[in-house]
Length: 235
Image (tube, rainbow, N blue to C red; front, top):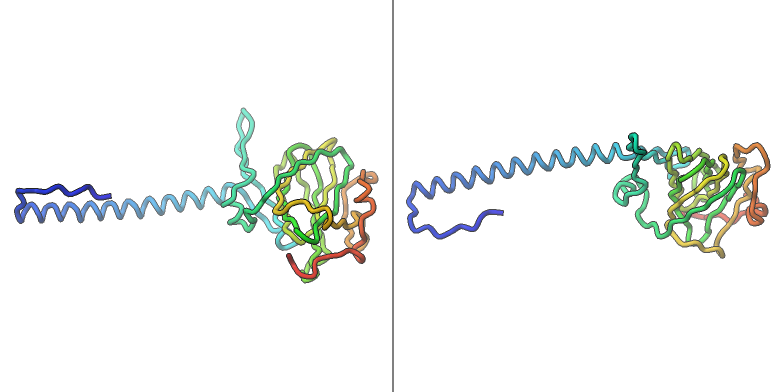
C-alpha cells in the first residue's frame, strides 16, 4: 500500500522528478520482491505437499493407498491423518460427514458391505493392531467389475485406504485386537445395506486367516455374487 501523499508547498521541477524516480524504483523493487516471494511460496507449498503423503492407485482404479509422512523422534511421532485441501488434490473428496471406530478381536471378519442407495466412500486406517482390508468392485459398468484388492493396514505402517462409492468393503483382524477408524461420505442406511458373502467363490478373496473367521449373523448369511444387487452404473 502506498503512503498517503502530503501537500507540498515547496515543489520544484527537480523535486518532482526525484520523487517520481523514487516511486518508480519503489514499485519495481516491490514487484520483484513479490514475484520472488510468490515463487518461493509456491515451491515450498509444492514441496510440502509432495512430502506430506504418498498416494498410489491400486489395481482397482479409484481405490487408493495413502502413506502419510511420519515425523518421529525420541518423544514419539506426529502425522497428518486428513487435510481437506491435500486429500482433495489427490482425488479424495472433502464431503466426509461421519467418523466411525470399531474394536475387534483376532480372527474377526467384517464385510463385505456396501449401500445400494446412499453409497459411501470410506477413508480407513488402523489406530491399533493389524488388519487385512479388502475392496470389491460392484459396479456393472466398470472394467474391473467383480475384481478385488487387499492391503495390510496396521498401526505400525500407518497406511490408509480410500474406497470410493461403488465398492464393497470388509476387513479381517490379524492381530490380537485391532482398532479400525474410518471416515464416511454418507450416513449409514441399514435398509439399503447389501452384504456380499465374504468367501464367495466367484470373487475369490484370499483372506490371510489360519482358522474360520468370527462372523456376525449378517455376514455369515451374506449374498453370493451371482444373486447380489449391484450398481448398474457407477454412483
